[in-house]
Image (cartoon, rainbow, N blue to C red; front, side, top):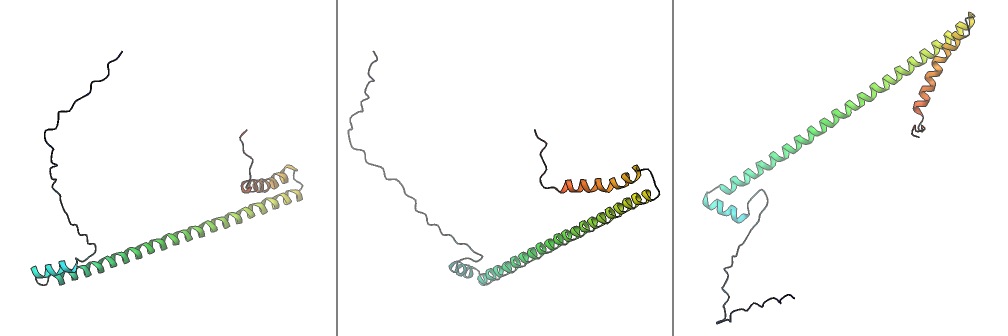
Length: 158
């Protein structure tokens, strides 16, 4: 069997202990935000150096004008950049449209040429393979174009 733990005895208190006074620290914090000091501080600056308050106010006014001009320059630069991007996008759209238009024109020209070749080969009594070959080229291109434009294509996964 295990022994019960021994009790710890405290020595008898001979006298009551007085709590020692803790030193306390008192701090006052003031916070001010803005381009100018508080009016009381401005007055003290002016007492130490006559005219200092006026110089501090002039400096804050100058800083405000500078900040405003920099923000205005940033806005103008940003707008100029957006205008350039928009102009590039419009030019790109024009080039794509022109390219599509030329492609369609050349496609029609080839199709008409092939059909004309087929009609001519029939009129000169060429072998039947020649008109079929002439007609099959535009038909194959049309089939390919229709297949590429179809929105729902069957998936190849099985």
